Length: 350
Ligand code: HEC
Ligand code: HEC
Image (cartoon, rainbow, N blue to C red; front, side, top):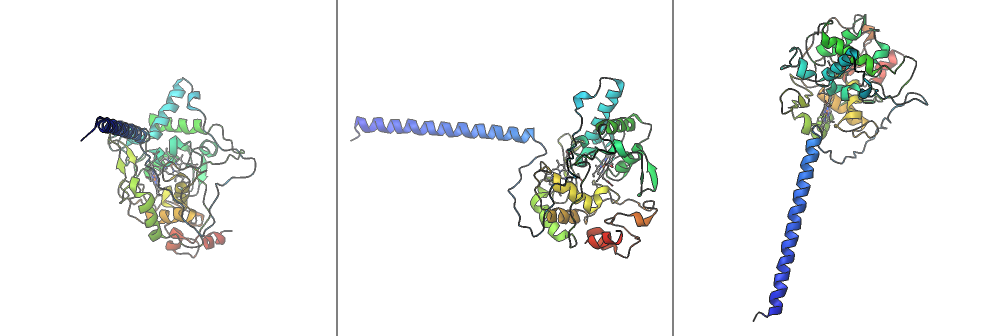
């Protein structure tokens, strides 16, 4: 016999159960919504796994160039004046942030580049400390460069990255686009003088390994920490609008060519150490130095567009230690110039 008391108790239990279910459903909806929102806000960022690899190698600390040096910070964009000059600077910043929209395969001004944006490599329009920023450009250009054996102006340097990093064709030096990018470079570096030694300008080299960087170990690093954004074949992923990359390519036909700065593994390693996986900062790097060198060796051992470099380095004794193509003035082979160990090569020049 079911007494009234038992009945009331069961009904109460049922009500409690329903409340719990409602609460669960509500929480999961909230979690789902905020989760989606976070993802939506941070396109470009997929969560990193926890990572602490044991390493035998003493890791580079964020390097500081001398005591009392100040970390470089880009000027505030709100301070760009409301003048025709200011408009040019703002246009230059847009061109550097969204190069592909203007100059890429479907660009609205010209179709002269591979679809990458300058800021894929010069993060946040070239304003991030240790993020291959443009801090020192205004102070040092025009300057003599050994790669071309000539004095290069801003325009030549910009076109260098267009022809190599963007695997494209030169922009007319008198075009509004070139003038705008140069105006921006001059503005963003305006507070850096030749004498001041700010910290964090451009790219800061890592300590050298005492072994060759290893593409096979680098492949493991790549699969673990890079492929989920840059793709298993380095192919990247286009943004929804199809006009620029959400995750830019690292190798293959849409990537930088063999004449680009990143094709030197010292540059690649230092860029990646302090900036990748995306979201990492120089204060809180994720990869060990060894992983950074090895993944650089792996990525730069994969196929990519080739550039005719016969005009580069008219004085071969001025080639950097990790320039991956001979002939060389020292007795070391191309293989060692590409992957290291670099210590013995550098020693020759000291
Ligand atoms: C694939 C990566 C990549 C892309 C894309 C790229 N760059 Fe670069 N850029 C580099 C690297 C690496 C260096 C440093 C090379 C060196 O020091 O030899 C560099 C150097 C420069 C410098 C000289 C910096 C200095 O401190 O001396 C300028 C200026 C520059 N890039 C402008 C541009 C512009 C403008 C674009 C877009 C049109 C662009 N870059 C696109 C990788 C890239
Ligand atoms: C969370 C996604 C993500 C992960 C993981 C990631 N990257 Fe990136 N990476 C990006 C994004 C986004 C950019 C472009 C940044 C921008 O345009 O502001 C980028 C840019 C780059 C670039 C310069 C542009 C190019 O395509 O040449 C290199 C080199 C690079 N990443 C290497 C790596 C390496 C190596 C790893 C693994 C250690 C890695 N990344 C992991 C998202 C990621």
